[in-house]
Amino acid sequence: MSNGQWYPPEWPERIRALATGEITAVTPRRAATVMLLRDDPGGPGVPGGPAVHMLRRRASMAFAAGAYAYPGGGVDPRDDDRLVRWAGPGRDVWARRLGVDPASAQAIVCAAVRETYEEAGVLLAGETADTVVGDIGAAVDGADADRNADRDGWEADRAALVDREFSFAEFLDRRGLVLRSDLLGAWARWITPEFEPRRYDTWFFVAALPPGQRTRNASTEADRTVWIRPSEATEAYDKGELLMMPPTIATLRQLQPYGTAADALAGAAGRDLTPVLATARMEGGELVLSWPGHDEFTKRVDRAPTYDSNASDSNAPGPNTAGPNTPGLNTSGSNAHGEQHPAGGPR
Image 1 (cartoon, rainbow, N blue to C red):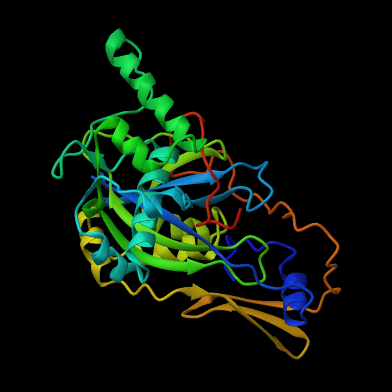
Image 2: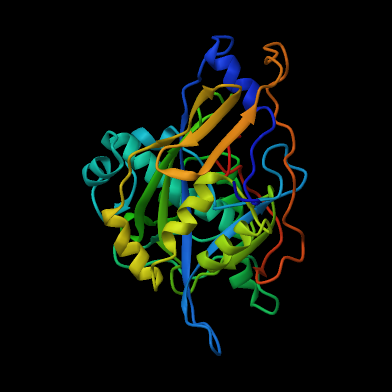
């Protein structure tokens, strides 16, 4: 097991409780997360290549404190039914790709675009099917009053989305925009283990940072954001310098062969979206936890006391191995609104 991998301390007890029928598996909620990429030009002796935008969960978070993840969150059921301004592959195409019905496909894609906007300030939408909005980040010092006023309006709408005051479809209507589904590529699908009290069925997407837009830390649950090469992130994880959950490090390793963000987006079309779900079994006196197709995450745990079904399901803090001065990372932004990240663990 790599030093940068985090496991909730209550997992062994919950696994045993599930096996003995003391607890039952809950139905996972649909969720989406986005690996946002940009091309890094490199430097002297360092070749260029794509970098990925990541968030670090605050040390005060009860679950996976200090872990790095991507922008992401749960699906808003309102986006299943309402007609969404849409560009790119149709809902039927996305339904076949994601393995769901067209209404669910629409809601999942909406969640991916909405969460990227809510947590990173990047919006994959435009006024027409072949345009994308420019920079809509926080107000800029020295900018004219009208420009800052418009930015304030964008920020107010983003905050209203976070608070679920209106759906993403309503947001697009308010702004006269169409969702650019062609800017997304479906990459992977991971389901929270059955023994977790809060579960997500999460689709991972890849996207390139649109020209003219900038990322920022707009999540209340992240204390920093970074742009980092997948190879650098995985190396830091292997050394125990960066903390990540299995889906995060697995998808980072899968990104490593691609030379540009465009290459990764093109490669998404051939990705296998068979759901990855952890399984648990007993071997002698050990509990063995494994993810099919991902042997590096196999964990063996000695027998522990029986799970107390009357105890709270709240998650204990995990170790924060990623310090504030981790080398090789570029931080950005201050905090505003945001949601938790199913990519890095359940809510």
